[in-house]
Figure (cartoon, rainbow, N blue to C red):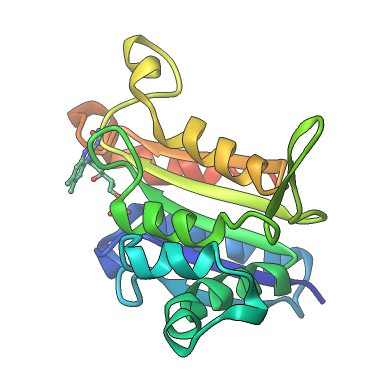
Length: 199
Ligand SMILES: Cc1cc2nc3c(=O)[nH]c(=O)nc-3n(C[C@H](O)[C@H](O)[C@H](O)COP(=O)(O)O)c2cc1C
């Protein structure tokens, strides 16, 4: 029985294309493994703060020296990392905002990238410590970025793949729902994306 962690980063609830696509991916995973357990973390309703001095102080102070203030500042980061460590599969929903990811998803990445815990520096460069996991990323965009002139403007997929790879999650499948702002494409965009899901 696998454990799926669903990370939501759209604030649009039932109207959200990335949420609908992520749900379709989860449905397919559950067809394969009916006993799979799904834990959802909605970053729109349970956001992480932008990194402040208190977070950085806590990140870079050895655990055995943590003050109560350090412990309070680092608690959410520790919980977010534990959610990932507990999961076998991550399903991340990612709307494109201004060519990049939403700020709530960026804050989540800022809280889960922790030296010595999710990655470490070695003589050969950085090494991810979150191994043995699979990730699916449900990307929703108004334009089309899988081919054509706008490919170079997509900072969502390269960024997410880089960050997941940096912490050790290298088995990443991207599923794109695209063209929601293009009259000829918007009607079929979600169905086309759902049809393209390959587990
Ligand atoms: C604030 C904002 C910024 C957006 N920026 C872009 C963009 O740069 N490029 C693009 O193709 N679509 C952009 N869109 C369109 C969204 O990516 C599209 O509506 C997508 O479906 C949003 O995901 P969601 O439905 O899961 O919320 C933007 C939408 C919003 C609300």
